[in-house]
Image (tube, rainbow, N blue to C red; front, side):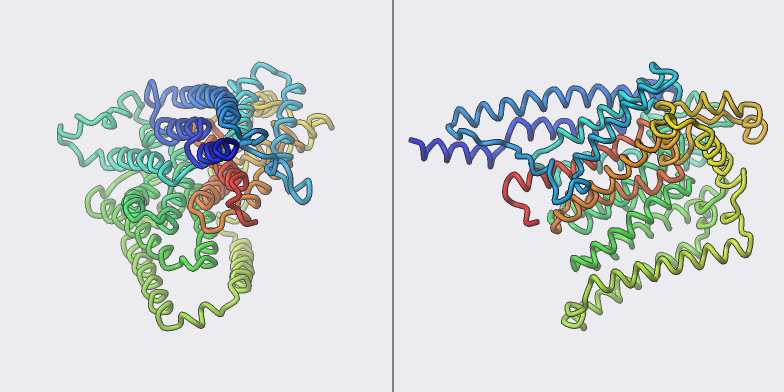
Length: 536
């Protein structure tokens, strides 16, 4: 009888659990509903997405706690006494500072301390003085990191791909709207997103994400995620669908018109090419890169031959909006793919004998040297990109300078714990309002650099714990990925978001994706350890 009970219990562990179902439902909400939801188009998109993320996460946390209890009761009923669905491996590491949970707890504690030291505690909790990145938001994100542990398949990313495809279609339509004069197009819901937008702001709103910088933030996540699926998915149909979405989404990189998209995508693809080379998947990577270049080329040709005139806001999008240049890049990606395909066939044994770790190290050193040389050259030639002043980066130079002054002038407690979540607007208005309006013609409520934003609002403890949480989670997932698509997707999504956030704003429209992908990666490998399927 005891033997039968154990078999039933193990069958239950190997089958579908209540916690798995709850996690899937939450991820469907975040990947499949959250990127679309809005109540008044662009005019309340921040508060709408904030409320959706908050209530979806609270509901998930409560259901996950109940589901975990239900799973344990069922296991006990089937006779597997003393069995735990989740052991404590996630909370332990060889060294304390390597444990993601330690840094997650430290980030939660630093947010609580910042809230207690805030001048406006209500504003610090809700974040209503800025972008609603208050204590309530961070607590929900942190609890999601703690609870999201389940047995999942790559099929969950299909919902993310569908949302990405729809967002790209909306963006392309809005970009090409001047030449789409037919009434036929007006029957689609996305044709009315900009109905109430005034003319002077018309070109800074795009897709289902509002400001072009926010859509750029999404692309910095979506493009690497799609390419990672193309490289690592074992399902041919899924891989083909992801390829189609990748090509269409790549058309909108230029439309986003923001350097943050290029920065985030470049950083994530740099990580992915290293992973793909190490795992002998470089041929698929080059193939995916061809589709990215193809999508970009298609939009360049549409701009040149069909649209002709549109609002060019400068930066890399304007520099790369040249058919000849983009066609050359496209041909270069095809050439790389062909060269590697031939090399794999002719020099298979020699390539296999190469020390991949040494190659990656040499590549990293070479890239670093090149970047340093470019920076030195730019500074010597006094190029605008390398000349830091108030106007640098669309006045990011101004806000970064003032943030530095605010931090240096703060007392010890505020240096340590910050001035409270979303307190930057009040600090800027109190100290620099007249100058800010005179120089930039706008009021800043964000540092346009997440690390600097955290330094001001939640202090040194907040910034250090955030970096510790990100790095430890990244390393934890990296070491246990083992050529699995879900961990790799999470790693490139985290990298893309983190890189673009160095010159972009944190907000509840795309920032939750960082915490969800981080939680998904941690939870997935944690579940593998619990199932005894992870070879550390």
